[in-house]
Amino acid sequence: MRKALITGISGQDGSYLAELLLAKGYEVHGLVRRSSNTVRARLDHLFGDPTIYNQKLFLHYADIDDTTTIRRLLIRIQPTEVYHLAGQSHVGASFEIPESTCEFTAMGTLRLLEVLRDLPERPRMMQISSSEIFGRPSDAPQDESTPMNPVSPYGVAKAFATQMVRVYRDSFGFFACNAICFNHESPRRGESFVTRKISLAAARIKLGLQKTLTLGNLDAQRDWGYAPEYVEAFWKILQHDTPDDYVIATGKSHTLGEFLEAAFGSVDLEWRDHVQTDPKYMRPAESHRLVGNPKHAIETLDWQPRTKAPELAALMVEHDLQAIRSHG
Ligand code: F7E
Image (cartoon, rainbow, N blue to C red; front, top):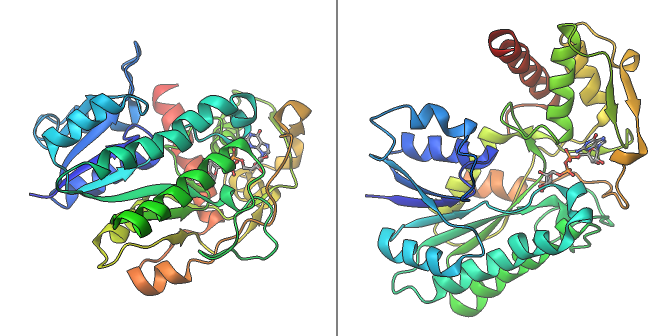
């Protein structure tokens, strides 16, 4: 029986990965943060299925800084694969809360590696890294050998975690890998990330529930892919014979204007009539020229990014339109 442990299972990627692994016949264990709010909307459909929840899918309370509990769970569950997705993932917020961002994202990864180090049978392990490690790269597109030059506390924390995974792989023989992910979005994306903010606003404006959308830096450019395709890469990374790092990206960069055009255009709206800017959404420093070269993943893992950014924008708006129509 293949058993996987996912940290951050209630997030966008964690929920898609849980679905993928369940479909492949895995027993899936997820770590969740203890909070008074038990709403885990992205996993609701799995909770609601009595053939899945507590049969093939199990959730455990463990904060990522709770090493003792994580060790106990790993010894008890004995997963064959660990997918480390948990962390504070908002780049803008990391300027406001740099210490906790580093605590969870950087130290959280090191603590997990240390627990794994002591296990008699070490599972394979994958860490979700980020294009933010490149910050302001001298070359574009970026690949696995592009030097790290992070410009946000989040990027610094991810650079630490990424390099630590390499150190444990090289020094202690870990089967540990980094998926260096560029932006990846979906209808399950958190509402404070720009793509979801845009898709929700386009849907609400279309339905007459909102008039304007307030954004920060409109000059931003990103390599936006579709999250369910990215979790396929996570799985493939751990099935390969040798551990390695992989850039997971589409290879195409789009401006925020292009994303707005596709999102608003999909419901026959002109974004310029509705979008305004406010400096409060600007960041003290912005990453530039982030566009990934996924050649290594495509050639080695037989992985393909399929959904293009304009298509992604339209599918997110369509989802939000339907959801608002049915639940308000
Ligand atoms: O910003 C600009 C903003 O917050 C994208 C995370 O998953 O991907 C994500 O990080 C761009 C930036 O994503 C608003 O300044 C303009 O240039 O959606 P975002 P991100 O910062 O790229 C990487 C790969 C990760 O690893 C992260 O965990 O859009 N932007 N106006 C705005 N961004 C936000 N959030 N809100 C705005 O109003």
